[in-house]
Every structure is written in structure tokens, then in C-alpha cells.
Length: 432
Image 1: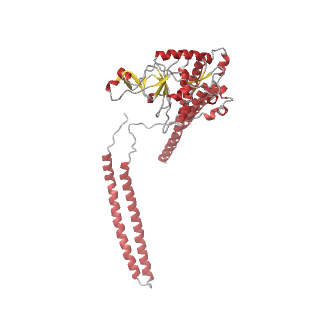
Image 2: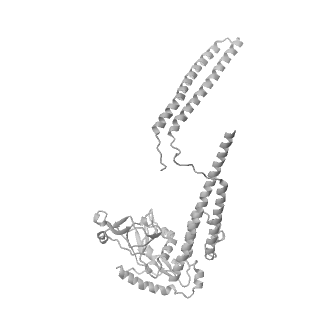
Image 3: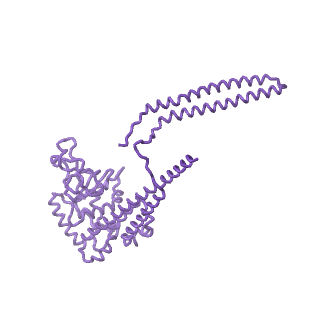
């Protein structure tokens, strides 16, 4: 709708035509200048031959040479002006910064009105930050984030800082700091030590239902491995002790009978840190599935990318699917909230990637994930943590949009000021 054509050949031809008279005038003036130089040379020779005692004749000759030199200077100046004029006409044809005739120039409006709107958004941002701080205050006080709490408004003023705020929220959540008050109000919930037995019993059923291999026994977590203190009714476990995991595979690309079937096949690049509701780009056949190391993960499985550009990215399946070998799946255990696991891995993604850095990129091994320390809360508290995190993430989403709007106004204010000043200047010139 806004596209338009430009006939460049026609523009260049017209430029040559318009520039030609100026180039010809330049040549004419250069010839005239050359002729003046010759005359000056002749007159200087005449001056040398005049007897020194003929003062009047010498002065007259000197004045004649001076006038010729003035004419030469004026001629050379005019020749340069003609060339500059011709060049500006000709080379302007190669300037491709054309104004689109189909786009109406944006009216940035009254800068004072934009400033007023930006002030409104700034007030909204301040209110959002106050709401976030109020929710996070109990967790921030006397924590490693105490500096954030003391000057919250200063730190969270850019979109990039909101990203770090999200990470801080996750860190506080999986340490139980966002649910401290909830624990006080619910002192009689079943502790994680009792829940652990239910998890182990459920895992036996999962192993049997999905025909999974026995997992290797893992060493108990030592005191040196524990990354932070947890509430009294929580429990430290290795991920491999509470989850069954396995990775996917890729059927042979050389066999066309293995591809374009009905079984979804997800690549690591399709994990986007959220629910996987959209079917993947590729699907495999039942024959491809049986003749490869692919595994059909059930709905609710948490997936994590193991290596490549998307290493550490997460997703939760909303339909059964196979994956490639760059993805590890955590089978759902009904006594552990999958979304809590999602937020836990997200909270520690930076550490996971740092620990797993290879020669040129991260390479997370299943063995590493199985040994990773996992803070297990009571089941009811897992659900509460997920609820609280979602609320805070929603506030962060709203805050990001407001910051975006504020920054957009900031850019428009300067553009509006410049345009207004330019318009006033033009009006003044026209009036004069």
C-alpha cells in the first residue's frame, strides 16, 4: 500500500541535462582564465623591459597587471562556482533517500501535551513500582537484595532492569522468601519429608507406565553443595532422585518414510520459556519413531534445551510430543508442581549455563541435571509459590509496557520540539 516506484535512469538523465550548462560554462571560464594568465605573463615581460627611470610608465603597467590578476581571480572563482553547482545537480541524482509520497508525515503534536502524557505514565510507573515493592518488601529486607529494597525506584527504571527484577523474584520465590507469611498462616501443612515418600511411590508407577530404565543411585547432597538456606519443612533433593528424565532423538533424514507423519517432533529452538501449545514445524511417522531414539513425552512434560544457542530454554508440553536429542524431558510427578520446577530451573539458568560452558557454547548434560540440587517445598506451598510468582510476573509485564510507553514519549518529545522550532522559524521567514 505504501510502495512506490522510482525511475533512476530518468532521474540521472535529467540531472545530466540540468548540469550540462554549468559544466560548459565552467569550461568557458577556464579558457578565459587561461587567456588571462597568458596576458598577465606577457604584460609582466613588458614590465621588465621598461626603463627603471620611467616611473609613471612602470606604475601604469603594474596597474594594468593588477587589473588582469583581479579579473583572473574572479574568473577562476566563478568557474569553481559553476562546477560546484553542476556537481550538486548531478550527484544529487544518486541520493536514494527519497521521501515516500504515500506516507503522510507524522504529526508529533504539541510537545507540552506529550510531556503531560509522559508525566501521567511516570506516575503509573511509580505506582507499579510501589505495588511490586510492597509485595516483595518482606522478602527483600535482611536479604542479599537489601540494597534493591532501600532504593527500589532508582534500580527498576529500564526494561533491562525489569528483566533482572524477574530473576530476583524467582530467586526469592524458590528460597521460600515470598511465602514466609503464608507459612505462618498455614503451620500444619504436610512437610516435604512426608511428600518425598509419595514422590518415590509415584515414580515407580511412572517408570512402569512409560517403560523407563532404572536411574543410577546418586550421592547424598553434602553441606558444601547446599546453595542457600530453606524453610524447616522443606527438603533438599537431587533432581534425579525425584524426577525421571530422558532425551530425544532424530530419525534418519535420509529415509523419507520417517518424516511428514502425524507425531509432533520438537527442536530445541522451539522452546520459548512458556507453555508449548503450538504444534512444531516438523512431524515424524510411527515408523520413524520406532526406528530412532525418539521418546513420546506425555502432556505436562517439562522440556529443557541442552545445548546450542537456546541452551537452558524451557517449555511445558500441552500435547504429547517427541523431541530431538538436544532436549531433555522431565516426566511429570503428580506430587511436584511442574510449574514450580519450571520456575526453579529458570531461577538457576545462569548458574546451569555457567557450569555447563563448553568450548564455544553451553552443553548441559543430563548427568549434571540429575545431580543438580533441588529445594523441595510441601506440595501446597509449591502451588502458592507458583501463584505468587505469576502475580509478580504480571506486574512486571505491565511495568515493561509502561516503561516502553514512557520511552516512546521521550523520543517524541524531542522530535516535536525540533519540528515546532523549525515550523516557527519557517513561519517567521515567510512573514518577513
